[in-house]
Amino acid sequence: VGDATTGTDITVTFDGETSDGVLIWREDEDYFEFSDDILLASTEKVQFRDTALAIYSSTDGQLDIDADEELEITAPIVDIDASTRVDISGDLTVGDDLTLGSDGAIINFGGDSDIVLTHVADIGLNLSSVTANNLFVLTSTEGGTSAGPNLVLNRDSASPANNDYAGSIIFKADDDGNNSTTIATITTQMIDVGASSEDSNVVFNNIVNSSLTAQLTLSSNGVTANTDLTITDDLTVG
Image (cartoon, rainbow, N blue to C red; front, side):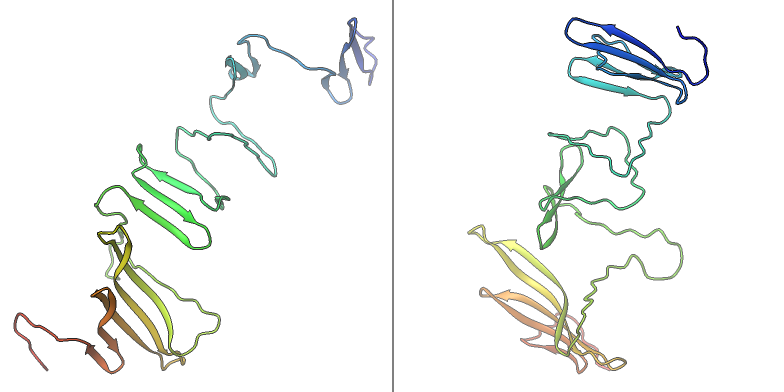
């Protein structure tokens, strides 16, 4: 088909009763152009290079893309609109930021989702477990003499002032009315925020008769016990 003339496109028209199909060979661009849909009515494949690279439908309702080495998608945005879920059977590597756009986003860990990390909108993250085992463990394999692993609670205030409270550790448990109750806290406070003259307090509180009570305070003046102090063994002073 064609007259072998340089730059000449070749058009083949399939003349139907109500609509035509047109197949064009674009000589200068070096590709075929087809003006209508293409239907593969069975499990036949569109193959590339060899039989290991193919696009096909192995069963009704499913589209398969096979590659024996790598499937590469290059685009400014890749939009996967899955109404139920996206299944990834192997490891997932993300080379940059990962954003969970839902205010109630959840990450489940384990085959039966026994550990769950939930985003609580405008509050923070909630890590929960169905067991009483160690829920969160920090491990350092560094072989030197430096302390580690380190847990840092950083109050990065834009306007620090004297007596500002900093980080706290809050312990909660349910009472017999199934109410989540704060039973103890360790609270820190910046008494003096002056550079090179900083002072802080660390206050240990527990619940006494339904009231959170400061029991022990560490300050620039020393250690203060706010209630009776019971010592069950030897006490050495000085």
